[in-house]
Length: 270
Image (tube, rainbow, N blue to C red; front, side):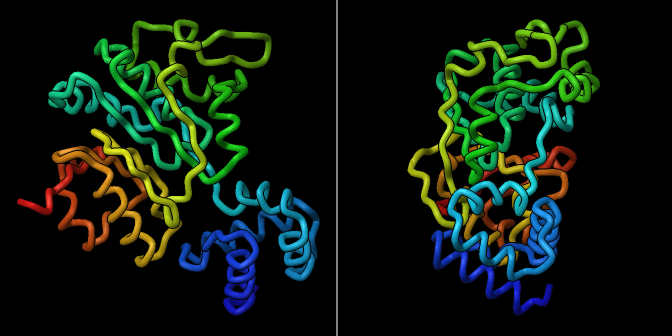
């Protein structure tokens, strides 16, 4: 696929659906388009073009192929240990608000609630979990995962909770398990496009992990402005291990902990 073909397709998607992918990282987008074409046995970009522009349902499902959703229960356990032992005890608020921007299928959201419970903060915290993908959000709301998937999460889970069992947090069936309802009750799921939509709430902590890897510098700046505006003074931003904070963001977020990619908001009034 040529750069010209990619640009034309992204512009057509923007015109048809109001979703602007033109400044997403081009190599990642090309990989996503190839995945999509292979999945549907398409031999030319013309076939994809026709399906995307004529079939609304096809395109909405295609978002999951264009943007790979990667998340795990207790992914990078050191992050959660740092949150439990240092970050959360430092926050003075009696009630907390946390935003998971790009929540994917929800494992990160439920991990956060398990962490909150260990500090008796679960019932005093409200979570907003957002994503661009309807499919990912539906799975996240359900909180249902295959036993094969949960087995892959066992090692990081035990690093954080070495004396607990997954049965303490999930209701197990024959081939799948569902997160217990108390870990869902404080979560609001919503569809949200980080590069186009606003967010009016103010949060103590924002997770935006391994999302900016898809953006070029223009979109990274736009997203960092949004995240900075949505954080309370001295609030925390947690990015992914594969994300790199642009120089533009270093005036907005100071390093709190390099190892775990935790930053703290720099107030513009300081």
